[in-house]
Length: 137
Image (cartoon, rainbow, N blue to C red; front, top):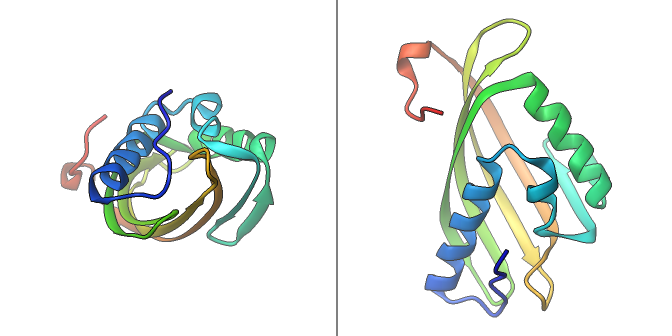
């Protein structure tokens, strides 16, 4: 996987965001985890954890619950080694069959090699009808 390294400009920040979107849409925890440092610090809603193994475990659990997951990320802002994105994704709850659209923001901090060393995410889930989906898997 080609790494885009800091300092970021608008073009490289947009490319970094697109690579993240593409990787997450594979729903492959091993592939996604390679973009993070071995000691990457995460906050995902109300969960805090550190490291690639924890990232993989989190993502495996996430995608067991969130069926038909489809994500869109958009660059919001960037500086030398930080990027902020807004995102939306849609998914169907494995237990209830209810569809959701999740809206949120992420703040990313990268090391000199272009691996993410910190990810801070906030999001809200909005129940939707299947026919209201914008992102198809």
